[in-house]
Amino acid sequence: MKNKSLYIGALLALSFFTSCEKEFLDRPPQDTLVDANFFKTDAQVLAASAPLYSVVWKDYVDQAYYQLGDLRAGTLYRAWNDRDNTLFNTSDVSSSNNSAYRAFYIVVGQSNTLIQNINTYAGAEVSEDVKNHAIAEARFMRATAYTFLVMNYGAVPIIENNIALLNDKNLTRNTIESVWEFITRDYQFAAENLPDDPIEPGRITRWSAEGMLARTYLNRAGVGGGGSKNQEYLDLAKHYAQRVITMSGATLLPDYADLFRYPYDNNAESLFEQQWVFTTNYGYANTMVSQLTYSNDIANGDGWGGDLGASYWMMSLYDGLFESGFTVDTRLKATFMLPGFHYPEITQTVRDDNGTEAEQELVFPAPSEDDAQSFANVKKYVVGKAVDLGGQATTQRYPNNTYMLRLAEMYLIYAEASLGNSTSTTDAQAIEYFNAVHTRAGLPAHEGTLTWDDIFEERAKEFAVEGLAWYDLVRLHYYNPDKAYEIINNQYRGLYVIRPNRMPNPNSWEFIINEDTEVEPYATASSGNFQLPIPAAEASQAPNLRNEPVPYDFGE
Image 1 (cartoon, rainbow, N blue to C red):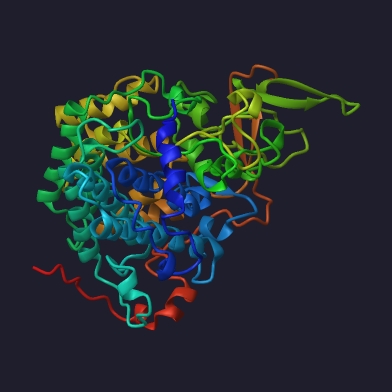
Image 2 (cartoon, rainbow, N blue to C red):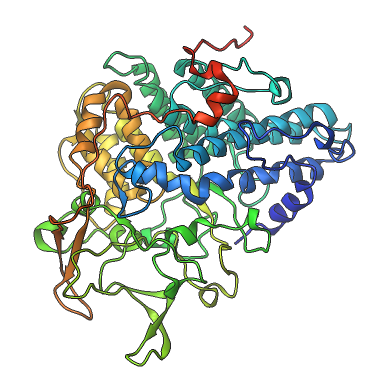
């Protein structure tokens, strides 16, 4: 269920929280920075941190979430839109690049502002626990934004004080190693100052922070290693992942599809979600659903994802699908739609030959005989019309949350960290944890040696359309760039058509590549385009961003 008090608190705090301006740091106007009378009670301080769970992430979650996390990774492709990310042609003037960079610095700037406001204005009635809790939330969110920044852009500026840099044209980038150290320290502070249980539904906990530390140490392990991974960091990744698995109280949901059947928010598997609600206030509602939904026939006037779907490469990962035309992997239907798939929870508008409309449960349509392409459109996060949600939806305003961290990732982090600097492992605990995720999907238990490729492909299937696959490739690129390029450059990212063996109720499908298309089907990734360029508009504001990065001064 939604935490309405969290949302109400966010609205109350909004007028005192910095607004989202379209600038590099999203810097707040100094004369309206804060009402000094607001941060006087525990309730007010917690209300001030509530926007960190939604509105400050808006520009990221709306489109950058999947544009970077899935289109660049090749789990999703677009036939006609977002081609720069699909084919690695993203430039310093690409609109998606500008919006992504801005989105992450909005989170950094707003987190910094909250920390400064609490330290400056918190009254005597505010308890130290609540003060530290809210600061921990801000540092957690800041660390998460910096994780996206460093993994997409490499060296970036570390900013702790927005106002001090308001007119600073000498802003420079900090080294990748410095940014990762900054991220680690923020998450460590969060882990030390957040409670084991959420103080309100949807708030992050110690286990959210320790889960992010597991992810952070796994990512850091390959940084600057010259082709090998840091064993100390791999051990720490395993340590934190196992702590979350065994101590957090979180559990895997038995049915994978239930993770995305509304209302799924803040369930037993979730460790961190963006909190969205149905409201007339655009900033607090989920708009990504509009971008993903393939047709207005199952939406509220806003289904814009008609050319967005699983790549041919993504389809090839589902066990047996290309060989026999069928897979027992339950994640496929929960993530992507194939012709003939039924979704009783979603209402579909259909029309007869006379154009008369009727409503039915969603049955995903098949292409016509003349079609040379079709799409395995996105199901994950697509929740239907207002009638399917008790009236809690309208155009660009949906109530369902966005996952940022799930328990399933802890199992697979442990497995990947267990590889060490090898390409495979027989570690029994690693295989057991891998199978916890694998068998939940209806697949037989994996036996024998577990390889990096096994884990990478499992993660792709488990987290497709959750914005993670690209960062798996970035993590690989830190220590084995050639393999990262090879994976990307061999993915078919072009058009194909899906033919069911019958309609209705097919039980197998054929996937046929469209070889006559003018749509370029392959990306070409290399050292020259793997990392996103800092947007030109930002570099022109602060020319020193083009200079070589420097270590960050941690004041020690």
